[in-house]
Image 1: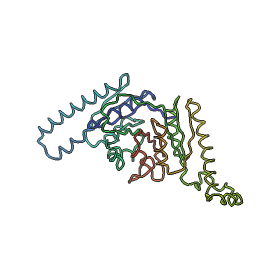
Image 2: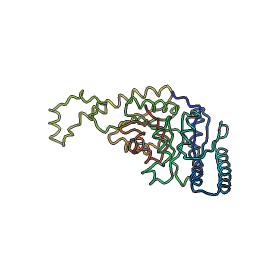
Image 3: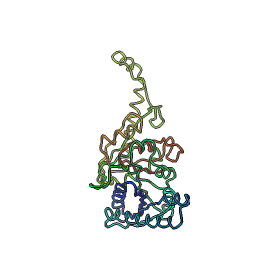
Image 4: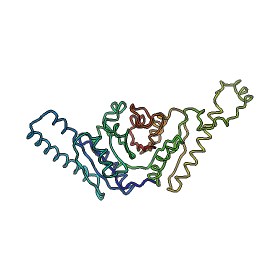
Length: 315
């Protein structure tokens, strides 16, 4: 299983960073991890390029660093009692500062937020989150950062967890992370069937009873691919049952869900209907999270859900 002894938490102090740090603290207590809180001053380079007088620039820089230090300290004081926490103030692009910090301190997990407005998140997660997701060397927990949430009155929890799977080898990494977080909780193991003719469901094993199909056609319009859908459901349930065995060792209460439809819509609907606290997903798929243009299942879910998503990169 993954061992997380250090996590990095980049925060944008111009948005509400409380939900992001609150989730980081929850995982730090669950996984026994120390935290590094990082804030990057992205304005300094731009101001320097605009040729401000050196004395004015240094004065602004000093004032900004003092404000950032005090703001981060207050944030840590609100959320991190009893945890080992370090703070880092950097200058330059936030994306580059995050990459450098992960490499320098070997962070095993990054917890970060998205930009606030929901309409904006449906187009872009935010330049920093997007850029990092495409190249992230470690799992990333994305916390939707709604603008109206200025403080966390009720600490987050993980009582219900959703693990979508396509049964690929790449999905095993997200399964390992789900196991870390599923102890004594409810976990929904979900598979969406979009095409019953995929090799995943062994369609060549289907035997079609043409006489029965003809008889049924006398009373209702036949579903020509019905035997393949039945086979797909049977295979999917069997594979989920094998996965279910892994969670028995952590005393998780599991429910197997096989739905027909597009994976993104199925995941979003299930998360809402079941009221899950966290979605755990692998970042592989048809396009992958490293693709130049967004479009993977994981990214589409990230853009539309109001729930935190742990995106685990598959090799």
